Length: 410
Ligand SMILES: [Zn+2]
Image 1 (cartoon, protein in one colour):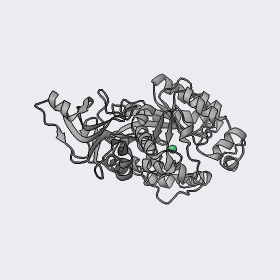
Image 2 (image 1 turned 180 degrees about the vertical axis):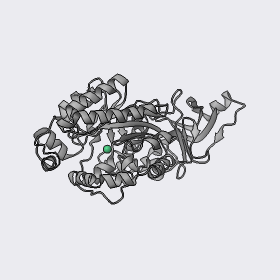
Image 3 (image 1 turned 120 degrees about the vertical axis):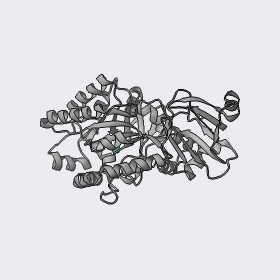
């Protein structure tokens, strides 16, 4: 068992409980969380390691949505308009995927651990990121993606999906969890969605889908017009949308755990439906900004659980979750910043765990021992200021424990 203590311990539980002079006991799971004083009394013969002046302990960060196969993008893709970006992805896809070698992806995963991420939701389009994800000490919920809207291709697409999923399932372990992703309502045929969701249901797998990311998507799904009209005509000779936002959402009845990424264009009824489904919304603020999509209105989410993701490097400059939270702090200028900082830290920990269906993200007895520590920039007088201080001044860790092992000092 390991014994650690720090000046501050953030549990990231529902009430955002903070323990001053906090301490934690863990092996692969968390055994106990309390004050240093109490744990010293209980374990008088153990040496509780003090992490230093202004040290802080909290749960590891959970990046619920990323696309590792697009890690090689720096300047290839067009930003500023969603449809232009999508065209540029299609144009450069092959070259980018080829460039994102195992070595390249391994390097990004290693950086994520240094930046305090302990769990990721990896959306895999081709399966080229499989080896890296299996070998990485990170916890990976590995989403095999279903994509394709051409009716006469459905059998082939479904067979291809099943083969990829079966390969992923061979590697299932405590830290590699196969799951299912639907690319989006505009790009995945409703029949294919139905079949794929059936498999997810039978296997109790987590499911995630992009939803209502852009104005173009919203106009196409509702009225078969807008910027996507040209896109679908030229790429697929398709004249109208195959589904509506509500018909799409209805297909997910009974799926758990479930998450929808972006949702910036979702209307009240659609948000209500997401809530009814018990799904989480995954917020990727940097990606939304770069593709000039709307800002997710956090005050509209009400009781819908929120998680955070960086999306891929195809629509971000970094996979660092501290950076993502910092961006969100400045983007959502309609919310009180201290409360927002707390909400973001909860979304990036316990919120992420809920979206992916894992027992992580809270420093509490029985949870997986995914724990990070870092040194705050300076002394904190009032504990209410700690969330803001972390978001402004932290972007890496001194220790990143995953399943109880310090992956930074092996
Ligand atoms: Zn995405």
